[in-house]
Amino acid sequence: MATGKTTVARHLAEHLGLSWVDLDELIERRSASTVARLFAERGEAEFRRLERELLLEELSRESAGARIISLGGGALVDRALRVEVLHRAVVVTLAASVETILARAQADKAGHNVRPLLAGSDPERAVLRLLHERKDAYLEAHGVVTTDGRSISDLAQEVERIYRSDTVVVAAAEQTYQVYIGPGQIGARLGQLLGSPSGTLLVSDENVMPLYGPRTRAALDQLAVVHAQAVLTPGEEHKSLAGLSHIYQAAFNGGMDRKSLFVGLGGGVVTDMTGFAAATWVRGVAWLGVPTTLLSMVDASVGGKTAVDFETAKNSVGAFWQPRGVICDVETLRTETDRAFLGALSEVVKTAIIGDPGLLELLESQADRIMQRDLTLLREVVDRCVRVKARIVALDERESGIRAHLNLGHTIGHALEASGGYTALTHGEAVSLGLVAALRFGQRRGHTDPLLTERVLQLLKRLQLPHVLSRRALEAAKSLLAHDKKRAGTSVRFIYARNVGDVWAEPTALVDIESDITLLADD
Image (tube, rainbow, N blue to C red):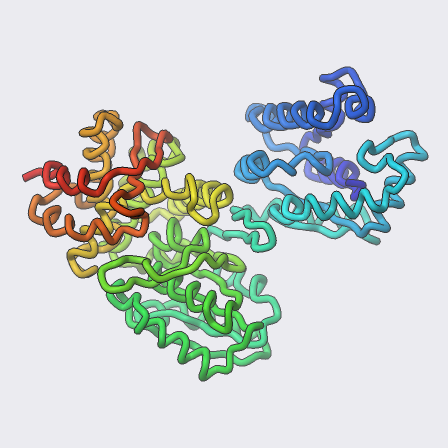
């Protein structure tokens, strides 16, 4: 409110040659009333309803092309709407001091532009209250720009820079962060995200460090602080408390304190372990994720779920700890092994089923080019997957609701992975088999459309992913279902898919899954 949104938006639109829309003007035209009169005669609730309706209508006008929309200060206070807008547009918050806001509001009032929420006898108190109530709403944006004492052209340039960054935002209140996706991102972005830590700890593994450690250390060397590193043994079987101790030892030897920064460079095992180590070292330090595999880019690196395995219970020791930022440099996918890269495509298929029909169509139409690692296509694939996950995570950070949908195919998939000692199958291969099992189980219970099962099966075949369910393997996995982290007593939240984009969690008795599991086999 009173931070210059309309002025900056109009200036930037002229500079970029884009159309400009002021939401308050749309509301006044639609209602044939002024904003002040709407508040007075119909109340704030009716104003917000109309504001939401027109904003979503404007965002749906794809034929209108790129354009700039200036919003009222309370337009994105509703979190569900805010997450939807973050998914569909670049959102920039303009901020100002209380003194600046009051001065601008007073000038507006003198010009007969009354701001209803600041029209009382104590506008300063109203500003302080609104800033407090809307704090999270203003932080959950692609960027926050302070406007005090700055020219309009200077502000417009900064907003344009944020717009052109083309990032995915993960909304998490004060922990909101950006995901940077594209080729060459390690060199282009890492230095920007480091901040001013007291020390840095680079965590990687024996495979990735020789490939990408030098360019990562080059960015870290720009900081005049203590550096340390931990090089882990690669493999899911080393994602354990014992493996974690190597990170703690490196942090201890390097004198890492609460203002230090951990950087996880590698696949999902490395980023999971780095995030969990960061969450627990001196009760929590900042960390950055630099995933170098397709699986870690589309899944493990986003959402703040960090963990290690314990015995046969996958990801059973962990914490929610959001990173400061994530850099997905798709050039690193060129050096990933064929087996790991292809296996990760199962998580892409899963993500498409959960929330992106267009991604599923892209996989079906461009499977060959994707398997050939076309960087342009891979950037789109990673971007679409991250957007689906970011949207879900923003609505359910702690997995109390829809975030569980991301576990489609994982209940049986994790059991198959664990029964093979985490070496017979990669995580992606296990998820591929788990997807087939979940869809067939859903069919048996009358939930899943058989056409979806067949469509997914054909796609998995084309992507050269495991898709044949062995009775023997399912029998071996049966006893491990009880270790699923979604288990509650004698049931587990099983994820069903009725069709693409129609996914839900339903408590299902373990005994029912155990009794049916071998019936899902192909042999």
